[in-house]
Image (tube, rainbow, N blue to C red; front, side, top):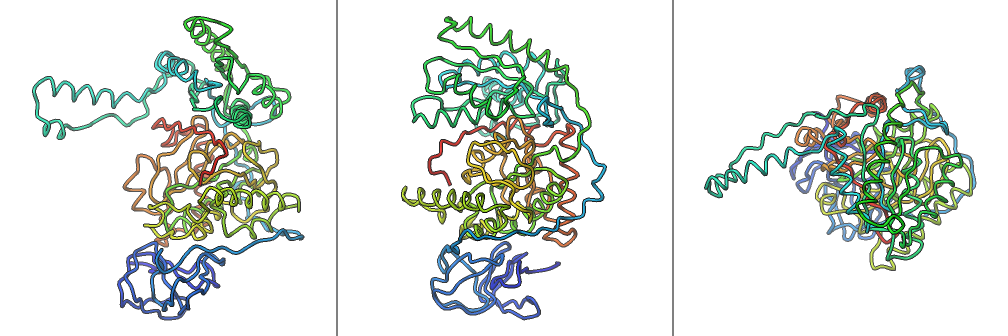
Length: 548
């Protein structure tokens, strides 16, 4: 059956069950025998020594919980017998030393990407259609219906065909039971024939912002949209404005200039209130968009070195294995890329609770350490003022699968950032300008955080999951990585890679991390990931409210 239990760090006083264990079962842990007092399901934790009420529980080498009552060696940890706790932190002077991994095997490795005039290299070539305000969402949707199929891009109509099949059965007088027994056999293959072969797609970023909120929301939205327009995966963009909204085109242009002073991509800006009739707006938008895409399609993929890649690091639907398989494997992949001069982005600040000291100590200068501390403290304070807190971050699914406190979840989530120094600390929606590991303030919400990482410059997102989540992004491939083999087999239509091999002992974290980087290189050269194949174009701007 393989290894039954695991301790992550020598200082830990809990172990993780790698398979279901029964009360009374004796397990060997670090040379000692522990008799389990409770049934312990795989992914959950049990105590390695007796504790008194108020004693500290250590995992990943950090404080993750406090005992609510006297507990015995072999007891399972639950939300009833422990509660969330995390150590305080301070900004400390010092110099972080790092010995990066050996990258000899990657020395000559390249990918085929789209070279931009600012020196960045995209892994895709998309055209964007963006509304400045929610009032234009309908017009954007009209453009979607007009252009997607006409240009030969996948429309995901297999479910429409299935619905028509069901209506035919209904018209034929079939019963409810017969309707429910109808077989869905929609094709799963990638089926598209683009008219413009060097444009990977036309993407429509509808949202609910741009007006009606505070002015800062409008400015932040314009910054995020500017991050997408200037993104290396984007060839050009069409922007629809109503005209009277808070998020004015002039603000967008200022934000674009901040990120790309010599911006030279085709950018179509249309104001409905200036143009007049809706049909005139849409006719101009469709015509000019098609012409712009014709020019953008002249670009082709060319070789680029791996230091041109920027990886976003994300997790969602995490489980008790995420922090010991998928996340550290992604962390090793991150370290490989950083050692070669590449860039990675670690976000989700509510899921860094309890590891602040470790990350602060890894900052390359005191100013960044101070900024990280201020952003974390302010975020936590605002959450508490709203009647919540970081301790409320774990979802019911997280808790069911072993992540019973935010500190346990956070300590595992932070493993995605590897071990490299922190080169910069950013606040949403700032753009990445330094190579290496960047910390970006975002919520733990999967889509909001992924949206933000891409807006800051992530060209590919590595997304780990233990429970399964279909999240994607309109312009950046989102590589799904499962923490366990059961999930990989069960949801193979949305998962790209499996690191359950680490749990099973057939692969080391380093081997899994290297395999992930191999896959990243393929995706950067045009390989389609499941989120792209499924058309998972999630885009949710963060309004800076309390989102955990």
